[in-house]
Length: 356
Image (cartoon, rainbow, N blue to C red; front, side, top):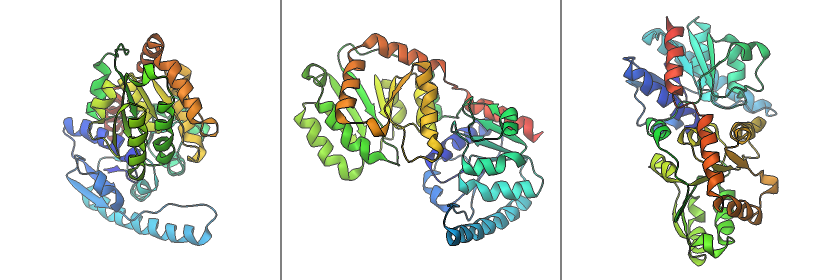
């Protein structure tokens, strides 16, 4: 049983593990909340179980009480499902939607694993970590976790989709004529990049602008303004709220601009692409800033904090990087150097050894 939900950041690594296990002959059951069902269409599970779940938000006593009751209902649902299915192991991917299944499994003495995608241990995983059979993590650092948990954590990396993993074999070719710029937004805090990147690109020298081919994920309400800004700057741009062929676009990109969610950072590393990262300021425990640090310390990425981010600052950084193909190549090599393209297989190995 795999317990994951809430966002694609939790669900997509879970799906990559499920695909690796299914290829080894495992049967998979997905335990999630109802919100994640729309993201789980391609999840290779023979059964999907919706469990009641809620977020515990500090400072709101009444809200926490309601959330606790909801989670308890989910735990009771999960206990019944576990008794029926009797899984060999229960694997959780963090976030509050994973709590009911993991709490139920722990209460029944079942073998359990949690996987932490971020460099900072999330609150749900911090609650569960002392009680599970095994702890896996994506990054060598596991901040906010106890010393005892860190000592037994197994660094496996972040499982990525097979299409992304295939990019590990695709070499990076620095720009010679056309320059392909990929801008991802993410579901949280996407408005800033939606509005700022077109303005920054329009401030670039014409000699760079006429070579640019921009692909940008943009909030729907910002698409019209972005298209107009790019058109006035004579920049070829494709604007959409969501790109389905992200692997193909990432593999063709000369430079990536995006947030620093765990999946984004891991996919950029596996693809071996240079990047500019803007960590989400309001992210809990600065997890995006810590994720980005892995690439920055390797020389694979440049970070701009939201507090210092302006169109002029972004334009200056873009001009510096896009005018230096040799530096872009070094950044690409550095990104590939910290990647773990076999993370799904590593985690699958841990699942099998834990289940024995």
